[in-house]
Image (cartoon, rainbow, N blue to C red):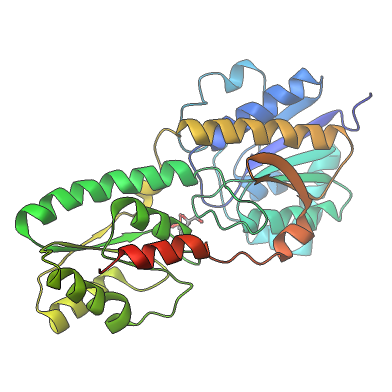
Length: 325
Ligand code: F6P
């Protein structure tokens, strides 16, 4: 069957995530396999506006599957939210003969994809964010690596907290979503986890859990805070003022976004990249690649983003059962 597109572009946008390079590699090689030309667009949507391109061959994506970050750079673009910016990006596509774009990123990236597809460019999104907060997919590229990195860091903190019988407050990423915090909290056996989805209540969510753990003989406590739930520094202060402990606060920050991707992130990225190119070759547009029950599927972006993703209720219940008892 003849391909619906002859030349496509690939870009990464928004916060980077380990595994994005594996996705870029897969898109380029899957396209070449189908005899579709693939052009790299640097610096996300703003790169598309400015025609910031990088010709891609099979060799140019060699040796990147194991590398964190993104070789195409990434950016957040305000101009792309305007009609003038979108028109410029569509003009770049027309000038270069790009009939399709694969956009790797989070929900902001997909909103851009939705808008661009209205200008007649076929766009397919691949979910890449450590937050795992894309509504329609069970999994986003980078989550596995970021959660393992955070777990390794917290394990190190725990060693010294145990020796000194201290309380540790550790802040993990997640401005709007607590998936990473909850997952890490479960994996490290945290005393308490604070997520943005729950209104912060110091007494119920922290103090009572520390008290219960202390009553059970524990002398060190690990409080995992998603950055959007509360300020770790403030939580530390409250622990000091109200419980008389001397906590140590650690903000993991961008450490969580770097590093060599895990096998899971590489494999998911490679499978998703392959599927994204298949959809464009079949003439589909405005689709987002998703993982559902470990199967790679796709949704209409509008439908996908309209779905409501709530925190994993079962994980939350298990965390509650494990913490502070
Ligand atoms: O979207 C991923 C994410 O890492 C969030 O968890 C975090 O709040 C944000 O990006 C940080 O963004 P920046 O790189 O702009 O500091």
